[in-house]
Image (cartoon, rainbow, N blue to C red; front, top):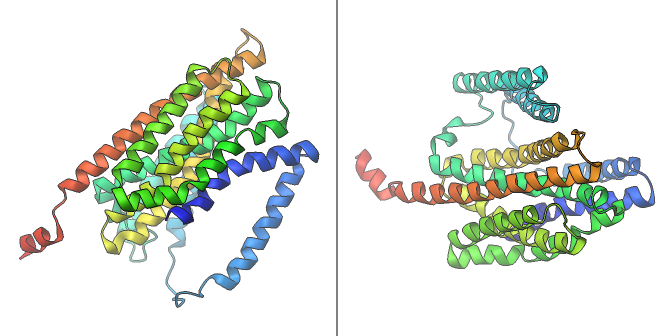
Length: 336
């Protein structure tokens, strides 16, 4: 799990370095051109790989539930993006209400349909819910901070896009290379050490960034971001492993789908919300654009610090609720 998580963990922070380098030497359009080429290569490779390890079975697919769930997520993300325009923006509330309605409709259809897109009974496991929330917040902080730190470096520190992207690289590489070790740590010491330790480091990194948020130097950003990423790598893959471990065997596929969806949604939500926080300050008329960006970034860092504490709380509830579950032997005795 640690080795597999290395790929997922490295991608979000290699992205800014790639984007910054391409936009510096070429232009921003080439970022999407090259990304499209990579996507096509992955698609072609996937055609030859899918079905190679397991027999392919044809099953009915609930397209209606899929369309409703997709529309709900799109409405949610677009609605959150409206936060930068203020809470009085009517589009914000319309889209959020629409998302809520679509999610409720998805639940109703899923309960009545024989062809289920997702087995909703996975959400009856409270320990798993807290684990999935922690997993969501870990990626929320990771993608969100990786998104706006390069902008901070360019706007506040007056550095180039190349420097803005490369500054994130050292901490990401070091933390990423340790990812297999953190998996081994999970195997040897259990889940509590890497999960609690990782959440603590993420909160600490965010707090350090917030404390010096108005005057962060390049070396400060490298060090503090490295601490944050070290915490993320320590707990990210292990949180998913623990979340899947505590659910019933017949629900592991659905639990995996929930975690993967949460990961993708966290990325878009993280960039949208943190960008909105910074934009609120940038739209003020009481200082220079660089100063306002630094002020907004500081609040965003405090926000991620609060999320780091919330991750610790989610981990604590996950372990507590999982411990309170009856063992298989107790469940069999009770059924008999």
